[in-house]
Length: 79
Image 1 (cartoon, rainbow, N blue to C red):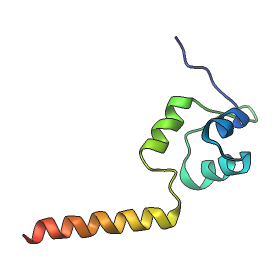
Image 2 (cartoon, one colour):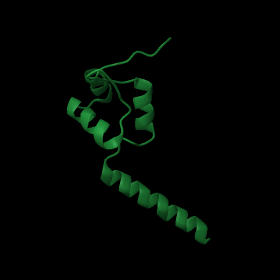
Image 3 (tube, one colour):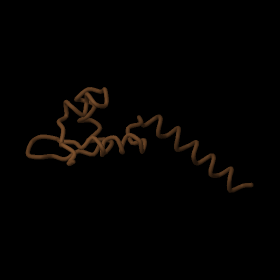
């Protein structure tokens, strides 16, 4: 079966966020979206993959997790 394209409203509902968050994430965080004419459309599988990769984290959370990974990598190399 072919996965349907869904609207901003439906992807916002799927993620439990506002439409404004969706537009902000397209611009600032690379939320996978496709512009068809004047409308943004989404594939749920692409958005879910994006979330699972951690791309939806806020910037402070990303910095924290990046620092932890770096700290863990430096400990592994020093032993």
